[in-house]
Length: 553
Image (cartoon, rainbow, N blue to C red; front, side, top):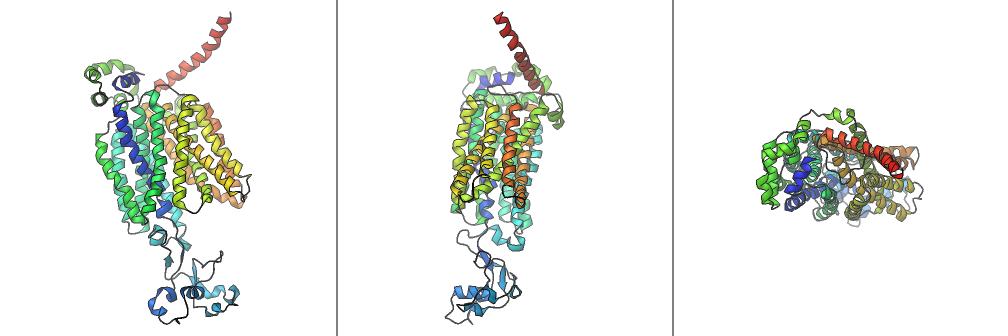
C-alpha cells in the first residue's frame, strides 16, 4: 500500500497525531452529553394535580387555620396505586370526610375524581426545570417523552446515512466542520424552543450532526495514523465517550435547569467549529480521489509539524504520481453503495459488520434498561456507566494487540449476551447479582464498540470507508430504536425480552468469526486492494500445506 509508506515518511505517530487526537477527542466528550442529555433534561419529577385549596392563595384563606398542607392534600388528591397521592387525578370537590381517622379509601368513589384539568404541580427539589414539567409530558401525554428520544435516535439514523456518503464525496474535514456548526446552532436553538414539536425538531438536527461527528472523527484518526498505532488512536477516541458519560453526570449535577443545561453542552461546539478549519483533511482520501495538489499540501504540512524537514522538501507531485500510480488509477473507478453488497469479498464483510453494529446498539439499550436497578441516584448511575466503560476499553486495546480483531470482536459480543441470558436464571430478589451481571455486560458492550469501530475501518477501502461506517452507524441506531420495543414481549413471559437481548449479540459474535483478520495490515485504499489481499491470503493457505509436504519429503 503506497500511502502507508508515504505516511511513515511524514510521520504516522508524531506531534501532528497527538495534536489531532486532542482536537478531535475533546469534542467527542461533549458529544456524548448530547446523547445522554435527556436522562436529566427529561427526568420525570414527582407531580400531582393543581388544586385550589393548596395552590390558590384566595381559596387557602377560607381554610380553617388548624388544617395543614398534609390535611389539604388528603381531601384534595386521592391515593394512587402506591398509596402516595395520585399523580393524574384529583377530587372534584374536597372530601372532608377523609379527615376522619376511621375513613378509608371506600369513602370516595371514582365518580368523585377528575383528571388534572388545571395542570400539575411538580417537585423541584432535584431539578428546577425539565422538559417534562415545561410541556406537561405526564399522565395522558407521558408517551411524548420516549417519543422525543425516538426522534433523536431517528436523527442519528438519518445522519449516519447522509453524512457517511457525503464524507466519501466531499471530504472528511468539510463534513465534520459543518456537523460541529449544526450541533452548536441546533443545540442552542433547542434551549429556546417555544413548543415541544419545535424542541424535537432541533434535537433531530442535533442527532443528525452527532452521527456525522462520530463517524468522521474516527475515520480521520484512522487514516492519519500508522498501522501499528491505529488501534491505540481509535481506542482513545472511544474512551472519549466514556469520559463523556462522567462529564454528563458532573455537568448535570451542577446545572439543574434543562434549558441552561442544553446551552452549556451545546456552546462548546462553536469553539470546535472555529478551530476545525485548522484540522487537516485526510490526505489518503484526497490522493485516492485525484486531488493531488491538496493531498501534497497536507502531507507537507504534517511532515513540517512532525519536524521532518527533509521529507517535506522531497515530496513533489512527481513523487506522489510515481508512488501511487496503481492506487490512483483504481481509485478513479466508480464506487457506490451497491459495491458494498455486490462486489466479491465486500458483500460478506458488509453484512457481518452491519450485523455487529446492530447487535451493539440493540444490546446497549437492553443493558441500559436493566441497569436502572442499580439505584435511584441517576447522577451516580450515569457516572458509573462511564467509569465501568474505561477499563473495558483499555482491556480491549490489549486484546486487539494480542488476540487480533476477529476473536476480540466475537468475545466482546458473546460475553454481554451471556450476561443477559444469565440474568434470566437469577431471581429478581438477588438484585446485587443481577446488577453485577448487567455491569459486566455493559463492559463487554463497551469493548464491542471499540472493536467494531476499528474493525470496520480496516475491512473497507478508502473509497468506500465512510459509506461502510455510515451503514454500520445506521444499523446501530436501528438496533437502538428497536431495542426498547422488545420489552413489549414481556406480556408473554417475563424472561422473553432478556432471551432476545441475549441471543442477538451471541449469534452476531459467532458470525463475526467469518470475517478476515486485519491486525497489523495496512488500510486498503481501493476495492482492488481488498480483492488482492483476499487472493494473497487464499494463495498462502493453499501453498502452506504444499510447502510443509515438500519439507517432509
